[in-house]
Amino acid sequence: MRVLITGGSGFVGQRLCRRLDEAGHRLLVVSRDPEAVKGRLPEGATIRRSVLDFVDTPPEAIVNLAGESIAARRWSDEQKNRLIESRVNITRDLVILCEQLKASADRAPRVMVSGSAMGYYGDQGDREVTEETPPRDEFAHRLCKRWEDTAREAADFGTRVVLLRIGLVLDAGGGSLQKMLPPFKLGLGGRFGSGKQFMPWVHREDLVQAILFLLDSDELEGPFNASAPHPVTNAEFSRTLAKQLGRPAFFPVPAFVLETVFGEMSRLLLTGAAMRPRRLQEAGFQFRFETLEAALADILG
Ligand SMILES: NC(=O)c1ccc[n+]([C@@H]2O[C@H](COP(=O)([O-])OP(=O)(O)OC[C@H]3O[C@@H](n4cnc5c(N)ncnc54)[C@H](OP(=O)(O)O)[C@@H]3O)[C@@H](O)[C@H]2O)c1
Image (cartoon, rainbow, N blue to C red):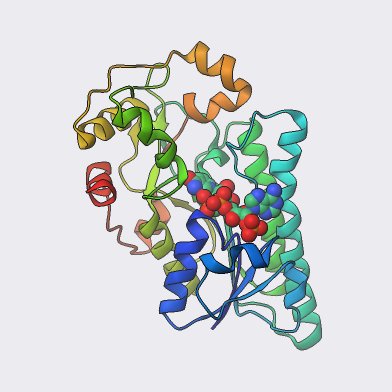
């Protein structure tokens, strides 16, 4: 089938595009700079600048992953707007595409899997968090809620909408792990603040397989937590990573240091949610990497 992907050039998107291509799907990728990202995508992918450039090539499915990196820079008011608008604007274009395709040929895409994040729930302490857990109102929640609410509008045109609340994506060659590795490899790693905050995580391959599963499961819609069944605290994460690398993890970073350096963005490091993928598991999705030990052994092994 024809699958339109936003953010296809990103850390998750590149692996997703590869898997979709291997499965024989036709790729339609939206990128701000088609020429620059061509080399990161399978040959034969059609890359265009805007979602609405694909009106003449109606996709049957959409995966929406584009957005300014949440940890790119301190969260000034301007940066908060950029984080919101880089997601909401492209998602709104996707809804307009669904509307136009529905109106012109009654061919709205069958399904849209749209990104969101663990931040939807805000800081939840150590309580177990499922898709039913009421969120805590803070910036990350408001960002994800606006992103999700915009995506949900595609349902008005008969498109099945799935919202993916993604945990920390782990793999080699990108994402947060790439940033964490240098200090840990030098034996200078350690927990952040108390280390009690939860860090739901997911192996990139499992995330991509979950997206393929949700694209194919006609009866599934609404929010899905996309993180491994066994979330860990930040202290456990640090210990496991250090052990995997054969290094000590003796160097905790005090909360006030992170707060001073990163401002409000330090909440990404100092707060969290013990998110469980309840709906994915109830639907029968099998994670290949259920524990952090198994995921890191695969990635670093
Ligand atoms: N990685 C994680 O740990 C994680 C965790 C939770 C949620 N998520 C969410 O999952 C999605 C995919 O994650 P990822 O790690 O693959 O992201 P990524 O590598 O940062 O890639 C996202 C893509 O979005 C596009 N983009 C970047 N800045 C943009 C801007 N200002 N305006 C419009 N488009 C922009 C870029 O595509 P072009 O340059 O081709 O336009 C980029 O390749 C993201 O939306 C992210 O928020 C990721």
